[in-house]
Length: 365
Image (cartoon, rainbow, N blue to C red; front, top):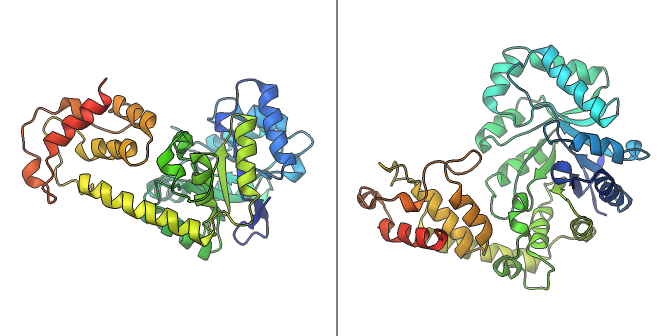
């Protein structure tokens, strides 16, 4: 197993961490998979209070392993963010995990700059968080986030945190500069979603062929891509089967995730896909808003997931769930009324109506 320094803490974490959001329902099987990963060298376990019964299962898996495993969980925040309510949620996690301390506590699950300024600073919650560390209940103050790269940088510059957990994968590289900046400032960087929440694990010849050498799966390509970034401390993957765990562990055992030639091949493939995608739509949003609320750029982005990356099932799932929570806002391409207001605004002179019809035909059945 490869190990990497977590910022300036002096702690070395396994390159692969166990993400416990997608554990199997059966407690014994969940424990068996986690403990097998510990035996293979994984020493970072990530869960959250809101992940169903995940903390209970993790608590069982840690029996006999607690002093060898670095544990991360998250305080979800809520309607009540008073010091007592925050501490109450921390105590819930401690009870479920059957432990008296958390190694890396994400003091807010999904921290934003607005929440930091309004609640952690404005309402003084940061003092409570520091007290928890001073008392040894949490060892390291960290946060997870889905905020914009610009706002994450501002959070890093506060000097309050020792590490962060953020999204980064083959198809979502917007946080690449943030990761480099965090590493430069001496913070540990944990990557969630290295396989895109599972979507990059779907069979895809287009993704597999990004590496010119033989690979077992598109998930392997995705994980190797993330681990090839030396500014990343640890990539947490949600593993629900022994097979997934063993495949991911094998990747983390490699001396180097990608050779120079393999890195160049992926870079070339991504550049070419970007070029092709921009022929279809650059995502400039000049065509918006649509009077009938069709999310034109998002429809074209979904089409590219299918066309360029072979992630057809994921693309269709996104398309069929437009407007639902956690899915793209607005409406899908089938709602286009061909009013024509969008096309004169497009700097690429894209035939938007024609392409929306193609999207609707592709995913409509």
